[in-house]
Image 1 (cartoon, rainbow, N blue to C red):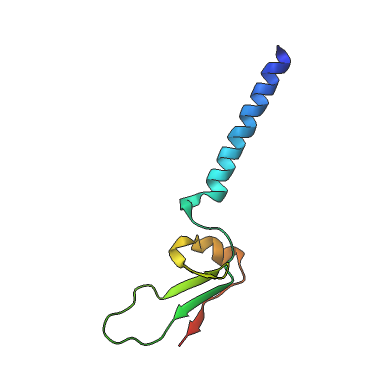
Image 2 (tube, one colour; image 1 turned 90 degrees about the vertical axis):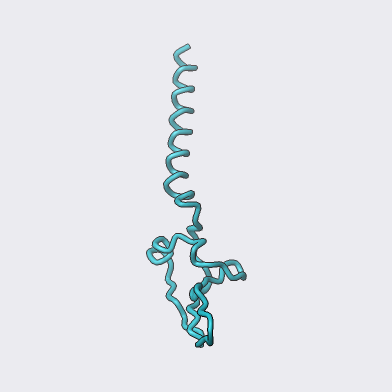
Length: 86
């Protein structure tokens, strides 16, 4: 009986730890926390309407918008700076 109680408590603690860890580490705002390959800033002059989204990442070979990433995490953990495109 005591062993079963210890096992249940142990499993509950592991599940609680995983939920807290994943909640803080992996699911923050539902944004990606991984280093993209490239970071581009579009500085090509436009005529007429302005393009709102001027910065973007290349991630796993595809263009991804900066809003999809946790920018603070990328700046802190990746050796990456915006490259200007003219």
